[in-house]
Structure formats: C-alpha cells, structure tokens
Amino acid sequence: MVNINNQSVAYQSLNSSRQLKDCTLGAIDIGTNSIHMVVVKINAQIPSFTIIAKEKDTVRLGDRNPEDGNLTPEAMERSLSALKRCKDLADSLKVDQIIAVATSATREAPNGMDFLNRIESELGIKVDLISGQEEARRIYLGVLSGMDFGGGIHSLIDIGGGSTEMVLADNQETRHLSSTKVGAVRLNQDFITTDPVSEKEFIRLKAYIQGMLERPVDEFKNALKQGEKPFLVGTSGTIETIAIIDAMETQGSEPNPLNGYEISKKRIEQILEKLLKMDYDEKASLSGMSERRAEIIVPGIMILLEAMTMLDIDSITICERALREGIIVDWMLQNGYIENRLVFQTNVRSRSVMKIAHKYQVDLPHGERIAEFALKIFDQTQGELHSWGEKEREYLWAAAILHNCGLYISHGAHHKHSYYLIRHAELLGFTEIEVELIAQIARYHRKSKPKRKHESYYSLAHDNRKIIKQMSAILRLAIALDRRQLGAIKDLECKYDSEYDKLHLHLTPTVKNDDCALELWNLEYKKPIFENEFEVKVLATLTN
Image (cartoon, rainbow, N blue to C red; front, side):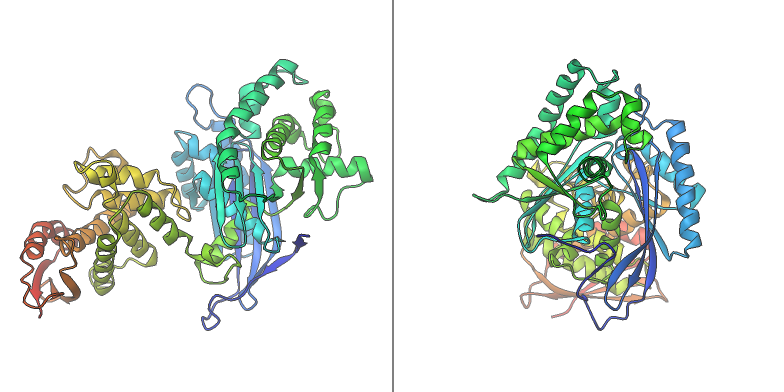
C-alpha cells in the first residue's frame, strides 16, 4: 500500500540547531511540451512544504526547426510569454526565490543557450540546464515528496515531450537512472502524418520505441535482484490523461484525488485501441483531454505500453508530483532544510564525483591530498585574495579529485582528456554549467592558461571565466605541493601580507629534515599563473 499526502510532505530536520527561515519558493520546469510552475511555502520548523499555486502552459518548445534543430522564434515567444505569466504570479505571491530548469528541447537545440540568455535578460529568471539523468533524479525526488513506498522496491516512469525518464530504487539507493530520447512531442513530429494514425505508421513507431527503450530497459532489469518485482509509479500529462479517461469510462467521474490512482496495463491497451480509431477532433472531445494533448496522446501511450511490456509490469499508479516538486526538494536538501529518508541524496554531488573517480581509476589518495591543499588555500585566502563562496569551493574540490582522470585515456595531453571525461560524465546533482566549470577548472590545471582559440572557455559569461581562472590557479599550487605523489607535505598555512602583496606558504614536511626539493621546485614553476591572477608574490618556507 502506498501512503499518499497531497498537501505537504514532512521530513526530519537535518540540523535542528541551525536557524532556518520559512520562505516561499517558485519552481519552474521548462519542458519540451509545457512550462510548469509550482509555488510552495516552506515551513522550516517541521520542515515541510505546502503547494499554494500552480501554473501550466502548453508551449510546444520542442517544435524545432527541422532543418537545423533550432528552437523556432514562435516557440521561444510562446515560452517567454508563459514565463512572464509565471513571474507575474510569483511576484504577486511574494516568492523569495525562483528556481528554474530547462530540459530536453533546450538541451538539444543549438540555440538553446541563447534562449536561456534571453530569459535571463528579458525576465530576470536564471535557468539551469540539466542533464537527462539529473532530470530523472529530480523527478524521483518529487515523487518521494508525495509517496511513501514502505521500504519496498519501486520504480517510476515519466513521459515528457522530448524524453522518457526511468528510475529504479529501494529504501537505500537509486539503482538505475536513465533518460531516453523518446517523447510524445518528438515522436509525433517525426513519425505521425496521418489522422487517425495509419497502421503503417503505428507499426513503424512501435518498432522505433522498442529499439530506443531496449538499452535502458536492459540496464533496469540488470539492477533487479532475483525475484524482485517493482511497484511502478507514473508521472506526466500523458499518464494523468489516461487515468482520467479510464475513470470517466469506468466510474463516470474524474478521479479525486488523481494522486494514487491505479490503472492496469490491460486497460491502457484498451484505451489505446480506442484512440487509434479516432481522429483529432474525436480525441479532443474526450473528457480530460486538452486540445494540445490530443495531438500527442497516441505516441505518449505507446511509449508507456512498450515500457511496461518490456519491464513485465502489469499496472501503474499515478503520482501528480514530478520535476517541479523535485526542484523544491533538491533545494531543501542543498540548503539543509531536510533529511530525506534516502539520506544519501543530501550528498549526491560528492558521491557522484567519487563514482566517476573510481570509474576512471583515479589515484584517490593523491587526488584527496590535492583537494585538501586546494581547499586550505581557498579557505585561508577567502576575503583577502578572493570572495568566492561554498559553490565555487565545491567546484574546486570536484576538479581537484578528478583533475587527472584523463590519464585513463593517455598521459599525453591528459588535462584535455580530463575535460572531456568530466564534461560527459553525468555528474548528478550538478547543472550543465556547473559541470562545465568543474571540467574547465580541471582542464587548466597544467600547461597554458585559457587562450582566445579556446571557444568553450570564451563562450562562457565573464564571472564564470573568472571562476575557472582563479580556481585552476589555486589547483596548480595544490598539485605542486604533492609533486612526488607520496604525501611529502603534511600541512600548509597561508599568510597574506597585504602591505607588500605577498602570500607566504608555510609548509610542514611529513618526514623531518626532508627538503622537499622537488615540491618547492614545482611550486616555483607553477606559481606565476597564480601570482598573475591574484596580483601577489608567492613565497614558500619549510617549517620543521
């Protein structure tokens, strides 16, 4: 039995002694088909969140230019208008912060970042671009905020306009996260030209969906233990519409609540068979079916049925909470408001970094020493040489741990290989721009500093370029202090002399009387970039 709570979700406090404030947040999901916003009040004492308003607009951002894949001017204008309404609603409710993410359509479009820049410049809303796996993780957090699985094995599927996310988890961990480029808008645009859908197009579409889902389904099944059969939860407009159609036909009214409504695979097959015989006007006339949903309902149901068939799951339960609520839960986790019953979610970022380090056989003792030195330099010069905060500190830590992962490919130009591996490593918990920052900090840990021909660097905003330059300069010093990779330096203390613009590094050797000649030589070699960036002179002294 799944316990449902439609109004709010309470969690155990992560740190009861910390003074956290009640606040009002708005979360916006810029999807391929729709833009969703939820506004919530957060009670810091319980802590919990209560939904006070919702907004949704079907904007079809995924109706991209077929020739170049760009978001069309019309789709961007529809989306900007919808986002303006979201912002007006948020302002009227006096929200303390708006958190916004963009997913599949923006992720894949060549002009996606230009669109996000327009949103920020015209509306003042900063939007994070998140990966498919990160989207799946946050959808899962949203589901956890509305359902209690009683410790049992459970799974979810979210069918969006451009992609389908699947998750498998138990009460200890998420075993599988995937995002596949099959979505209702995408498939309708690429495969369907007839109305009603012809048998030929139906067969072709079904084969395509099966092929696209084959790999994630195999990975999902491989994560199951013998005899396990997971409880399946579904989110998204497609699945909610199916539930409403079923309830109207079997009960004569819409389900109330929709959250927790269960429908069998057999009934979904019957509904699809009925819809395949209808043209657009007939589908649009059904109770619970919007005009825009009628255009894409058939490919959406086909994705769901193929997934359930391949997973050998006979029924699905509806959850109304999804990505937008997951954005709220993730914010609460990151800001110390809650401790989820899956407590590991609070350190998903660090766990993800370490997972990538293991994958690429990073020398962890060396990486951890580098990270320790880098963070000491960061902490002991904060407020004097720089004013960066916790986020930049975390980027530096992650880059320090992973800076040598490129050795997995080759020693030659391994800093460039490190950039590539980090950039494409699916670091969970981080946004796309944060992954880019970490990758570039690692990339510039050696050899030259950024040059004009480095397009991936110069395409970033000025503040982000400054983060990369200064964090990578700190990383260079830290790497020099473990040149022999045997922990010759046990500790360091930074002292800044503002009168003479000098930074004194007092180094404590691990072995008494070790002159640490190679570390000191390497420090002299690597320090000019740091000195130039922070406008100081670096001096090093051994203290036995």
